[in-house]
Length: 69
Image 1 (tube, rainbow, N blue to C red):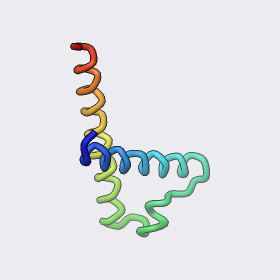
Image 2: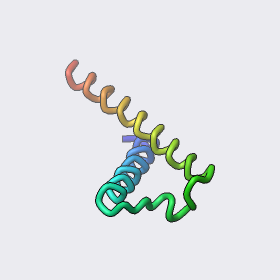
Image 3: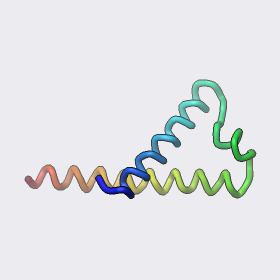
Image 4: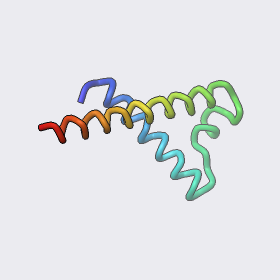
């Protein structure tokens, strides 16, 4: 696992934890830290989404390689 994969995985996990907090406690950590409805909060949400997409692509890439071996 290279450094980009580790970074995107860590950001995706942090985003998942935030969604867990929203679902369980109705508490949004990102908005609490960076104020709701700001450009910074939107940028964080976009970064988490991009990291999730990268991780999905890496997952299918790994699945494809393991089935060929």
